[in-house]
Image 1 (cartoon, one colour):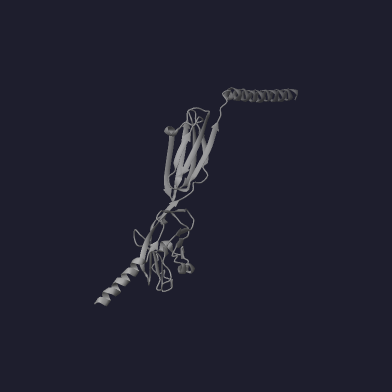
Image 2 (tube, rainbow, N blue to C red; image 1 turned 120 degrees about the vertical axis):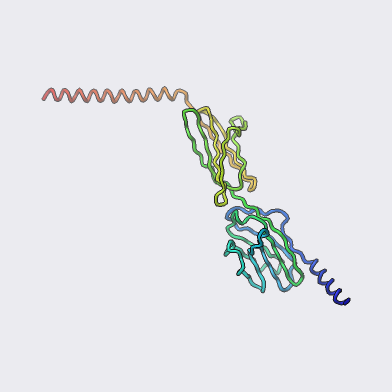
Length: 258
């Protein structure tokens, strides 16, 4: 009886000494990149078993035992996208890579490692982000105002601000609409100016990836444009009127000679 208790105590001590190490902070992964989920354990042991699962629903992401990958129960969401580096097992590295990372891949993953030394697990938290594309500018002129608009896509929802020529915040006049589609926020932001001449700056910040975009819009207006345009139009009309009158007179004289 004493021997059994001693053996149990030794096995328990060995199990307690085995540990898995994962990052304590979330790991940021950009849209379309290959995510690396770090996981380390104590090497130099036999009967290695590595299992990666989603924490929220226990979906199998990747598993390894009997000295080979066992993917029969792998979730279809990760088919042909995951990889373990077998050469790193001897160094105690059970890190997993996931290709073509998308919004649905964000979340918490369990790294479960077992060998003859013991068993332990750790949680790796993956965070998704996407750089915002180059903003597309459009300007709409109306009789009462001018609308300046930028459109772009990225993730997550950004910080948007419009500034005046003196650096004043114009956010009170801001219109923003967005929708998530395929892992991207579609952002449409506009500023409505009551004056035909203005100078504004569009600013977008995506803190998740330390991205900042600034685009300046300077619209000028010539108050004499309308009168000058009228003079030009009137001159052209007079020219065509004189030409038409001359042509009619020439035709009339020709017919009289006949």
